[in-house]
Length: 407
Image 1 (tube, rainbow, N blue to C red):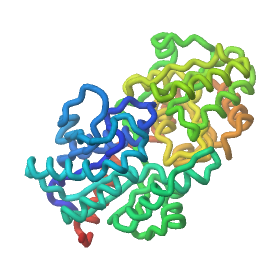
Image 2 (image 1 turned 90 degrees about the vertical axis):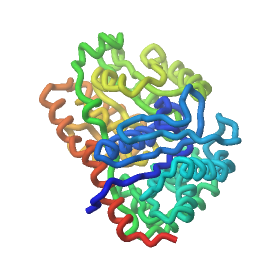
Image 3 (image 1 turned 45 degrees about the vertical axis):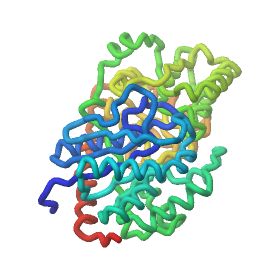
Image 4 (image 1 turned 30 degrees about the vertical axis):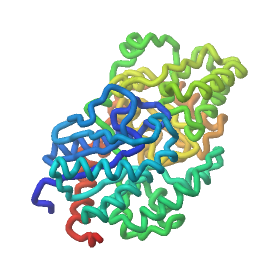
């Protein structure tokens, strides 16, 4: 066991943990980094999270939790650029990290990178600092391209992922499927890949009285279907809107869509146009992005939360919904089979085909939430609490700190 507190350099280069959820580059990974770092800090470890400077009134160095700092890195690149374009600025940010480390006289015990852009920086810092490097990709280029959802991840990303895998001391996969992809598609060694699911904040995500939640949110339809996520084609929102036109007795059923930002305006117009073509525009409400602490009210107000994705690395939305007592209908992606283990928790459909989604949504709407089911769902995801997940991550830190042979 580790008999000392660790000092951890956590890299979340392309997306800040404080970013508004539901935006182009913000989602589950942002929550993961923030929650994991906070839990590690509460356990007595020190975490510095490095990310690129972005819009918003944020100081360069921010205390965002007990023993947790967020450090924004200056870059010569334009602030609002696609993720892949950040690659050209990585060397500048590497120098920024090293300059800060030296001025702060900080020595790190382990590097934990998130996503491929952070991974390639972590590999370089591993060479400079002679400390072990662990990476979690959150999404992988090859599986995304194989899902037939008009996705085209560049070869630069895929080759960089392979490079990071070759040089990392440990890889964290959120699901068994991701572990299999890392081994079969990327050539990772099975002994270097550990499966640890994502977590959920059980103190934040807990049931709220449905009637009270609906009144506070001004939601007055008989049935409410919820979608939470980015306006990205892989998230399958178009499939869900099509499904809404097929839901049994849907005249008083509304779809509430939480997510989207200024980069999603064109996609929003197309989604609104689709709803109009299907004659359900008055029953599809686009809320926009909201603060995370407001999400429990939306989950609790809903009869069902739907995850219609073509691809997910895990699917934290499903965990959050169940922690609030709301059942889930999901395509068979990510960690859904780990999360939705019986019909009390919801249904998994083979694909996000609108007819399949509509059938299961209709089934749930005929059986309103019962207080006993709400308690059962919440208890069923208690094993995904961040205190448990952070302990598993700490065990992996221990393994590589004690055994890694660094260059």
